Image (tube, rainbow over all chains, first blue to last red; front, side, top):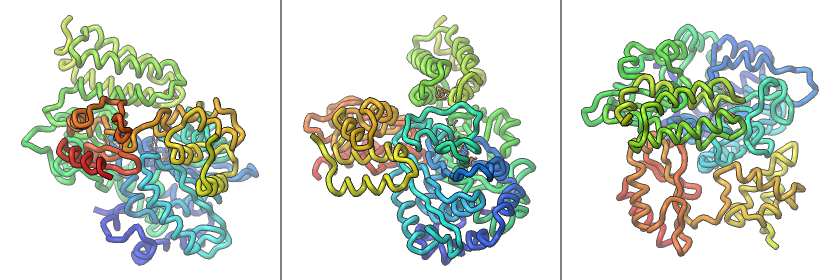
Amino acid sequence: MTKIHLVNIDKPGQASLETYRAGGGYKALEKAMKMEQSAIVEEVKTSGLRGRGGAGFPTGMKWGFVPRDTGKPTYLLCNADESEPGTFKDRILMERDPHLLIEGMAIACYALNCHLSYIYIRGEYEFVANTVQKALDEAYADGILGPSVVGNDYGLDIFVHLGQGAYICGEETSLIESLEGYRGYPRIKPPFPATHGFLASPTVVNNVETLTALPWIINNGGAAHAALGTEKSKGTKLFSVSGHVNKPGVYEIVMGYPLLDFINNEAGGIPNGRKLKAVIPGGSSVPVLTAAECEGVGLDYESLLKAGSMLGSGGMIVLDDSCRMPEVLSVIADFYAHESCGQCTPCREGTGWAAKILRNLVAGKGRKADIDLLLKIADMMEGKTICPLADADVMPIRSFVTKFRSEFEALCEG
Amino acid sequence: MIEFSEEAKRRYESILSHYPQKRAALIPVLALAQREFGWISDEVAEYVGTLMGYPPSDVMSVATFYTLLHKKPEGKYHMEVCRNLSCWLMGAYGCVDEIKNRLGIDIGGKTPDGRFSLQLTECLGSCGTAPAMQVGDRYYENLTPAKIGEIIEKLSHD
Ligand SMILES: Cc1cc2nc3c(=O)[nH]c(=O)nc-3n(C[C@H](O)[C@H](O)[C@H](O)COP(=O)(O)O)c2cc1C
Ligand code: SF4
Ligand code: FES
């Protein structure tokens, strides 16, 4: 299978500039610097690349929204907050191939005419940030970054910024608030970051995986990228798979690859002779799929959507038939209750009450009416808040309760 | 009165130089202050606020939003075990129980000698090597109760 991100991931010393260069590293940046900025944006549009942070928004189109005539600087912010439960793909890219990210960021910065850029890395990944910082230091020392990017008349500074523990700061406007030095409260959109982002200037927020696709796209052309995958899902995708599988880890597949083949081949199947019960394909914020619903589903945006779930971040969690679904949902619901920033009443109260009701149910103290109450709370949260965190709680609640209702009922007396 | 060490003052200046506006440096400076003073006390918030020109209430309101900025002194080894789904599936609570039993502390507690404290945390991005725990700036992965015993043993003697 074609690889875009993990080509060199197992190469010893890949994190060093020397090894990265020996494998053809920074050739794409050199090539990009000879291109018109607008031509790079066009190339990325042609590639069909969609954001890998969770929302799947077309990257070239997002870049196209950035105004060029405001007189303000433009900022590129790399989203390395990676906190969606089940997701650990950006970590491996930064730990093992940090120069790929730096090269991708430099290409994006040049295309966007950005001269100052930040990598917002979750604080828990401090040891990962140290690896990235070392790679940045090497890139500066080598003249890749700094006043003249790979010898061109173009200056670029990239800094690492560590988060300090808040899932919500992965949401792009919360990330911007946090980077500005405030509590990470998401902002009401519009205005969008493209026009009013970091320091009220035009800003693009892109995920680590999105940015690390760029060197390949510049080297091979947008059309080659668009030739991979399905109609609406181009290129490859990293899936981090965990839970009940024999070989948890990060795997790169071409979009459209069958979900069940992925679980049985790449992930090594279900351990201990157990059976597949359900899959959360894209991080805990997407609807769960029953084993039966996984039949014939491809790992791409449209196929997962048609099956009733979403591709999300590619954080796949596999559940075997020993799982009691109300317990699983309770663990998930506690997360959203803990991470709600508290700005919106439906989210602050809804995530909290859903978590409490579920704890009560799991403890055997629930009533059947609580099940419908959960669904009612979900209705009251959905689409009524500043950011999608409330919806991210609604999706597991609604899918678990409707698809495994009998398990919830069995816990209730009357 | 508390004050940054000379080394921390140099770090502080370097942090400020990374941002076009001073305010953006506040959270990294709070992280630096925690490294220096152990946790974000009222005194630390006041010091950082005076240094940067913000009221201590403003500084504290930011600090209280972020879980990695501690609002009370934690143990030298602050053990944060991931309770989220993949770790939970792979036996995180067996590890939590082992810590509780060995150290005689509960979640949120600290040993009397101040060496260890225990807390639950959310997904650490180690779901493929679950269960996982963070202690300071390092991760421990693929945990088992036996491994927890070894880790505590090791950290008790250095
Ligand atoms: C609650 C919440 C958490 C998010 N967490 C992350 C994250 O950890 N990493 C990330 O890249 N995107 C995250 N996102 C998506 C970002 O808002 C944004 O869409 C993304 O960074 C854009 O980059 P992309 O277009 O390259 O995907 C999150 C969104 C929400 C609503
Ligand atoms: S939906 Fe929740 S997390 Fe998002 S802004 Fe509102 S309260 Fe905060
Ligand atoms: S669930 Fe524990 S590290 Fe992700």
